[in-house]
Image 1: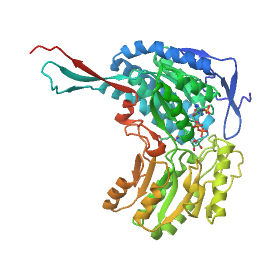
Image 2: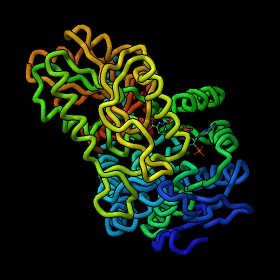
Image 3: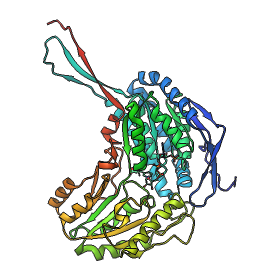
Image 4: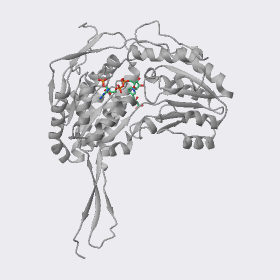
Length: 487
Ligand SMILES: NC(=O)C1=CN([C@@H]2O[C@H](COP(=O)(O)OP(=O)(O)OC[C@H]3O[C@@H](n4cnc5c(N)ncnc54)[C@H](OP(=O)(O)O)[C@@H]3O)[C@@H](O)[C@H]2O)C=CC1
Ligand SMILES: O=C(O)CCCC(=O)O
């Protein structure tokens, strides 16, 4: 291993974490920095057998964890939260190294991820049941809410920290125990979280991290086990559908955060500068590798040329480079396959008449770096308008009126996020109500926060994470009927 490439963090762990034990496994897999290709670590490559052991551990830990009061669980979660913030820089460096995003974004991700732990530690104290007015004089009816049981969480590489805390914190607060399988590209952030959970005093078996490259074997075990009562997944729509099918036999509760193809609409009456700033964030955050990233920029005739010129100039000024260099704003893509998908979308669009206003090619730095790109004259027939690019490519599609904008925005099977900019209040209400998406940014490109429900409709997923609803995903309602009450 190249000593320069090895993270110096004291939180660097290469062993998986099951039942409070750190396990090396018989084999290890390599984790690389996507900016340089450098080897960062060799992590335990576990499979179905170890996943089964982790499920058993989570099941055994369940009665003890569930028996604690919400306040006792919250105290441990808040210790975990404090430790994460205490190690914010170190954790951010791990994200930047294994995922590639610039320090400003990785530091932000740690604060954002930690905020889910704080929010759910508090929210877990407010799990109310209800008393139902009884239609029977000798019966009293009420409901209590209880954690669903053992939860499986499968998370992606694009937010290696926050996608974990967004699932694990509400599950733990609800009294559930968790088996997590992080993405093979980014296991180090997950293992660092486990190290801090251990320090925070979470009992063995309550939070388990199974690292491995056999996603199919690990996934089959998690979805097939009758001991696992809920699955929470963030990733591609194709894998989400597969996991849903696999969960059918044991009828698990499902939370799915899948792909988006977010429309970003700029009406003629928009504040031009605000719309450009909104687009820069909504499109180029994490180099475009975010499920809520704007994927199609729909721009009205009257503002099209001005918006295109301003956006292209702003995009051309973005600094592209590794997180290790100060001032970089756009990191590498996660893989060569991701680079190839961006190139494919550009080639398809250009062959059908689109114009490159900015970027358009791999970056001179080579490797997984790509020039942030703006395309004009894109049409709804082009691939880029129909499928999620998951890269730094902003395609501009022209529209004439509000009805056309809504038709374009609602076309397709995705319905995760949508954004629009307009200064007409009536239009804002009309469009917000007409748009088919689980989340809508109105004159705003940054919508994510721990206190609001995050999730999609149509084929973008099931359920909500974050906010009050985020806890519901991990709870069941139990109805109690007290009979024989003498009057
Ligand atoms: N909604 C979102 O936030 C995300 C959307 N995507 C979309 O998906 C595309 C592909 O990205 P990719 O990383 O391949 O996404 P995947 O859906 O393949 O991966 C997400 C997670 O699922 C795991 N996984 C993959 N296959 C299975 C399986 N059969 N059973 C159980 N778990 C499985 C992965 O493990 P492993 O890493 O070991 O393969 C990873 O932990 C992106 O280009 C983007 O369009 C991707 C990431 C996040
Ligand atoms: O699923 C994703 O791509 C992560 C979304 C990040 C966010 O919470 O905004």
